[in-house]
Image (tube, rainbow, N blue to C red):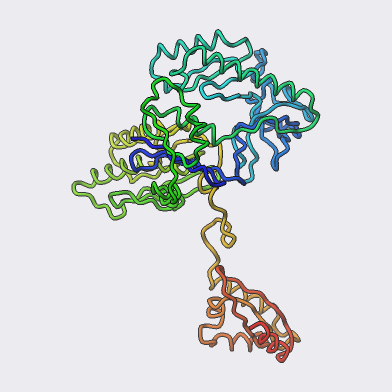
Length: 495
């Protein structure tokens, strides 16, 4: 049974989708990391980049939006048969005002990616004032139902409009869908009228991404339970529930003292999803290494040795890994390029079996995924659409010591650097030097029992004093040069 757990009581809003006791999906919305995806702005073109066929758009946020040519409304709606050969400068100029919508949040050094084709989302329909096409969710299996929705959309829209029918629209009456389209059309016109009177950048529509994704998740559930720890949200969600074919979907209010995520053992799944190593049930394990636009996943047999042939052991491990990788990609909300280093398989039929397992496991992830195939080196390539920051980006920050590399300079390396710097002052007029460092660096520098320190003092021509400071990384600071009495006094003060 599917169960959707919603934690809405604190400032950090969260939900988790469970299949039995397994967490399949997580959504976490923090106040200081609110997604801009779906927000509509009146922007100003600050820079046109012919070499990239794109432009930077000032939207009033910390970073400018990035608008590629194929997302510019003037380019998409141009009837010029030669438009593909023309650069972005033919459709956009610096200083121009235009409406844009955020498609992807800023990540790393990159600003948000924006589009000139606006979308207004309802529970069942996405309305586009300038979309010019009608699309129906591929998750609606009934082709006759899909065709009815296409005809409904074609009859409801004018030449310039477009719309996308969500999966939930298959359960709605025609009159309800037409009413929703008209409401979205009215919202669009009001926003365009407001924008026409503005002279500077402004946020015109702020999307509540948490609410919309929560509604979307509930819309995909035919049966099961939605558990919510906030009574007003429960009532609000129940009011949005489609009446048709949803009798087996139940809404429950949770009012226990323990946090609802803790009660359903979801907190420990979040902690696991932040770890680099993920253990599989059979003793094998996965290693996740995230970069800004690339994730590498390594599959290892670990403690699993199998009970039959090597081929069967490898295939069994890779099959289990493929299923868990699909779940972890969803939990961690990883996007961009994904490279998976499965355990080497010698038989092509085994590789094809793994390929099919990956495709089937990722089919219901909710994110656009393209499985490309194995490289000559046996690495499986796939891409997964990235619209917002990953779970690790949202919940963690770079270590101030290693700057996200996971490695720091060794005590030995720091000690050698100190030695070289002190030698630069040899034969000076100073009698002594005071150095602040860690115990580990001092021990490396002095040779453990100060045997090497005496040699260095004689070679450099001055006495060396230390003040020890505990630290999570190895360092040294030359605090002061001077005569011996002054340095001894300073050492006592610092201790």
